[in-house]
Amino acid sequence: MRPLTEEESKAVFAKLANYIGKNIVHLIDRQDEPHCFRLQKDRVFYVSESSMKLAISVARPNLISLGTCFGKFTKSGKFKLHITALDYLAQYAKYKVWIKPNGEMPFLYGNHVLKAHLGRITEDTPEHQGVVVFSMNDIPLGFGVTARSTVDTRKLDPTAIIVFHQADVGEYLRDEETLF
Amino acid sequence: MDVSDILAAHAAKQKAVTVEKEIPLEVDTGFLTVTDLNPVDTESYEANLEEYLMSTARDGVQTLIASLFSLPTTSSPDGPLAQLPAPTTQLPRAKPLPKPKPMTKWEKFAKAKGIQKKRRDKKIWDEEKQEWVDRWGWKGANKAKEKQWLSEVPANADLDYDAAKVARDARKARVAKNEKQRQQNLARAAQEMGPSAAPPPVDVRKKQIDRTLAVTRTSTASMGKFDRKLEGEKKLKGMKRKFEPTEMSAESEKSHNLAILSKLDKEPVAKKSKKSAPSSGGSDVLNVRKAIRATSKGKGSAALASGGKGVKGKKGKR
Image 1 (tube, rainbow over the protein chains, first blue to last red):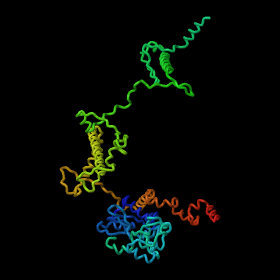
Image 2 (image 1 turned 180 degrees about the vertical axis):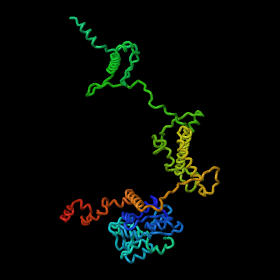
Image 3 (image 1 turned 180 degrees about the horizontal axis):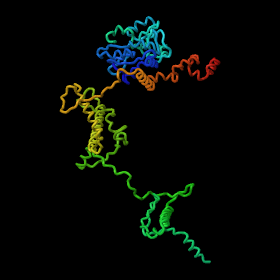
Image 4 (image 1 turned 90 degrees about the horizontal axis):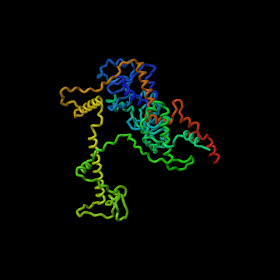
């Protein structure tokens, strides 16, 4: 377990900024309890300072997880967000997409969001913007990247992809062994 | 009445128009230059320096102007203009003579054999067209075989024998061969001139060699792990990674992270800038696009810019 280097921090923040924009400040500068980012093996954990201090005494091979896993660094140094970060992303998301009940299951099986399943979308969402996907009763289901801007979606046919799937809560079951 | 006194006085006042010296002055009207080669008269030089210099200069200028008046003139609105001849004085070269170019392989051979260079005309006579055509290049005569409407086919030729293609390939091959020979000549010349090029400084060269050695040592199948070690060979040292201590004060970590964040905001990421471009200036406080749509009632910024007049006018017409 160690703090992130500058390059690593940049990669993590750039990826987070895609979803929550300037709200990252709220993650770093928290009123309730100081939190920090820690790297263990290749995973990035967002953890309160008190738990981090407890975890210091656990040997590196024995430490499986702490705090909230935000994602992991690939071997080529890119940062990949995991579904476990959804709690924070949903809380601070700038752009949101709500999908109809008939589109929930397809999305949870790892498919992209089609226009037919689109219930609501934040106005003025640009193209290729990270969005958090909600069910119609405001339960966060996952996140993805918009394929078109809100304006462009009007002209599309119902089978066109609106949001590219990145992660969904179905992964808790599908990738149970590798996720944590 | 005797005017000879007056004339003599006048002539004394006016100095002689013709200058006579032991060695005649050298005049180069092209450069408007006069050179006085006479030795300095020490007596008058020491007696009165200014006067002596003045008199020598005056003599020179007198000669120059006299020679100018003997030149052919052209008239102009500002008066007659003398036409200066080409300068006769030889000036020394500003730059040293160029070094002789290194000889090509053919030039060496020709020199050894005593072969004289023959200039070939760039144009040759075309009997059919009855005119001079270029030997090569655009519409060059070397492409005649490719262009002719009827061409010979060898007796043992294949079914798909294309005479034009064969001729063209042969021509291209000749060009390629020539280019190859030119490159070889250049390389040979560079090798001959080589030692004159300054080698890199010692410390730079040492670093280059170290770098090359490090690369070659890891460029084996086992990335240098199972290679036979040479005597006295040192272990390769990589970069030592350095991390912050795991336990930092929360305050310092926070400020560190915020600094990185602010740096990220300043960096113009290609994608990010594209996204933020439409809502330029519109921070989170005001959504410019939305505002434009609301005020123009969905007609866009162009309608807003024309000030509603255009909209009304259109309505009036209809």
